Image (tube, rainbow, N blue to C red; front, side, top):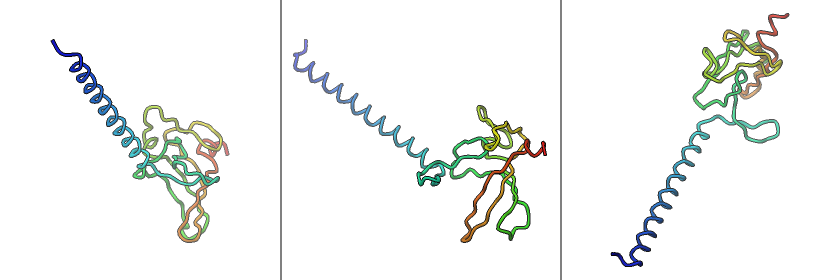
Length: 142
């Protein structure tokens, strides 16, 4: 019915279309994963490597739009303040499925109404540094 050269041409055209679709599909997937990673906060760790900023309560990477729920206690003009950290939008006020709230200091589970106790250091040039010291479960023991 058709000449064998026509069949070979049809086969090659079909293969070319499949390879082109596969190429553009993979390229689109790579763009989507890059945009997800670009929306996450990043910071340098103690070794100078760039890592994601994570919630200290649930260890979930934070997006640039995510804020931690916390309270800083007065006086505001001191270089060292007490603060409590309740969590991020993923774990506070309601934890999402699969998210576990745990203290990074003692490793104990933190209840939904629990929090982390921390010290907030206000350095020069409006730089802030937070050190987690304990959790609400440890505070109950004292």
